[in-house]
Length: 116
Image (cartoon, rainbow, N blue to C red; front, side, top):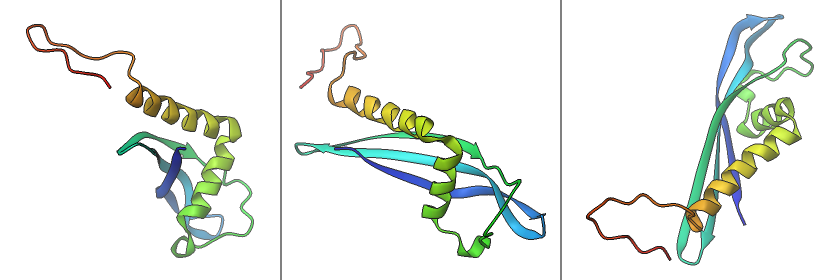
């Protein structure tokens, strides 16, 4: 089972807009997926940014009260379930290729590494 950790702690914010200070409008996200197979831990990472729609802010949360969980929820909502699933599927596929490689890099004149 792969565990996905969404880090949405780095953001761009308008100093002031709509009467509110430090309004988050863009999120720099990092998603790390990890799993364990036997004694080995495998992980893969996906990064990107997501612009938030701030046209109609209700229940404004001051920046110093924001949590990663809140910003993750905003980010995933702005992306939509399909995009969130695609990101996590890409990570799962990368981990699967790490566990079960279908290609390797070889150097002529060097021994072929064993693939278990």
